Length: 298
Image 1 (cartoon, rainbow, N blue to C red):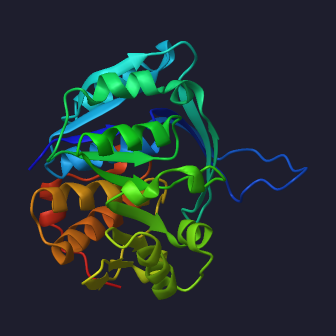
Image 2: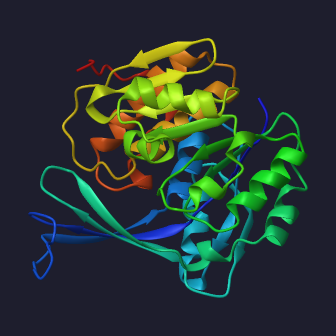
Image 3: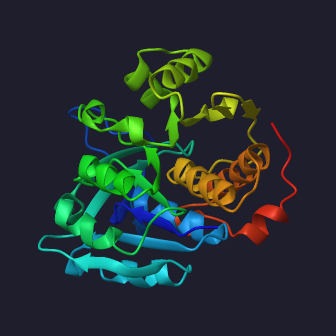
């Protein structure tokens, strides 16, 4: 198993529990206010580490986010490649309604200070056999992809949050795409899962496509194989880290040599456990919890 390098976002999540999401012109009182560590990058690094991977996280925080280093380190993530930047730490304002659904407003903060020079320095210690994990919450994505590809590092990309810059990235260099239906639609123009994965493979024939489908589970496709997996029955408390937990677990599993069907199963169990708990990073289960789970498929 190679090293897992995540050049990813580091956020502070400000979570407001609400009866319903705020609508234009409306003012509502929150039912509860909480602060959690977050960011898709941080969440995925923790998930990969708890799933058994040797994980290095690279990124930038502000002085207000130095406590995130302890959060990552306590879960086995190497934080030696995280720097303190010029601005404040990226943050998210998250509304969670009584059904466990969420809506999120992001501020990039120091996640917007990732440069080509930073990436060059970070990538010095990595090469063929390692896996680079990226999301779309930091700057410098195209440069990072190009630099990693030149070094023979395999690339996994979670194009979230989706935006207009995505088509500009050299995505032909990506080996693993982990995306949801909305992101798949934005990239391919298709709405049906089978057509999304088919079009993705037309665009990127050497890639592995992992398409999450919410209550319908997940669909995996590559040039030769197709697998699906359903969800598990849990009481939903908070869906904030569901996708990140799935992504981190899946990538750590396949990187360790676990076959795709089993990786899908373990990642699905981990994600289901995560949504049954409050918070983002703090809701991600250990591999022991996942393997000992007796969840039933829905």
